[in-house]
Amino acid sequence: MDKKRVATLTLDDGRSVELPILSGTLGPDVLDLHNLSKLGVFTYDPAFFSTASCSSAITFIDGEEGLLYYRGYPIEQLAEKSDFLEVCYLLLNGELPNATQKAEFKSLITHHTMVHDQLARFFSGFRRDAHPMAVMVGVVGALSAFYHDSLDINNAHHREISAHRLLAKVPTIAAMAYKYNIGEPFVYPKNKFSYVENFMSMMFATPAEEYVPNPVLVRALERIFILHADHEQNASTSTVRLAGSSGANPFACIASGIAALWGPAHGGANEAALKMLEEIGDASRVKEYVQGVKDKKYKLMGFGHRVYKNMDPRAAVMRQTCYEVLKELKLENNKLFELAMELEKTALSDPYFIERKLYPNVDFYSGIVLRAIGIPTNMFTVIFALARTIGWVSQWNEMIADAEHKIGRPRQLYQGAVKRDFVAESQR
Image (cartoon, rainbow, N blue to C red):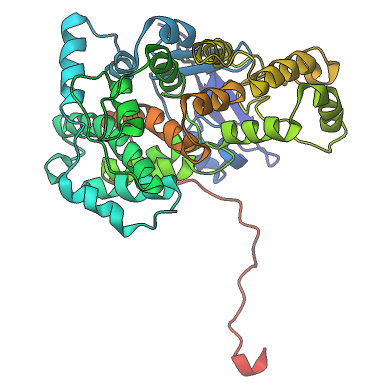
């Protein structure tokens, strides 16, 4: 039997407590802080950057080494060899599917892509110029009003049905949000298409002619979906888990994740990187801009990451995908891509950025790819939400299935007024 490992915390008044040291299969050890309550103290960790909020077997990140694993599989291998629905099955069930399981899963998701006809009418309640993310939050949350038969979160079969419905219907809702925004009629899903082909059809097809998917562009978007499918306990995933810990229905929980993702510090990074490249304008201005970043005049978007202190493993995949898309569309001389390559080269050879470990992240190139495919800037975060839905659902399902899960209740360090007596208005 392994010897129990503990750390001893001693306060300045001499009181002490033993804190068990827990080890995961990968990653740093963690201190179990349950015993702190015996001393009447708790920890202070703004933004939970040094706190493991849960135990999970889904995704692992090693920021120092630049590693990202889904259920143990390196992201680079999945992006190269897998497809999105196969990755979805993996995240949801823990293992890659065999041929029969994959075919059944694909069929199941494909035949759930339609949304209730009354849900389609829900869109008319929004202004045409509403941001698509505002529409996503409202419509995805409204799914709970249409699918009452799968809302018992303590029933594993109900959770499975809800997971499949969300995975199938969010792309349809996302495409409808886009079509509504630009004033075009909705395009219904087609069962003959793959998951990604179907989404592109609903986005770009018109009733006037048949849509023919471009396999290179489909593969590019498939990779974007795979690269963004999950990313450990980020802000939106933590939001989904916290909402879910209260017993909220899965549709409401995913809507809360979409709302958190909408924040520019989370889901808007690729849009910010694209805007930065447009502001630089030309490769000839790169050195000037880089110096401006060092002088704190400009911000370098698409470089560095809250977790990764080495190269983002998704960035290399995205760079290659960017090249493939531009070549397919005969845009090899794309000004923004050339500018991005020059900026990356300049920054990675500059001691200022090397010392600070500011390497390109996945967002640096994904905006260029999305724009080349034809997706407008205001839909970038919607694409992110679509891809991340499977991660949110998998994390939510894992939490609910955990017999030890409790409602989330962070504590605080109170620094407000001490007790004081009410003063009548005439005496203030």
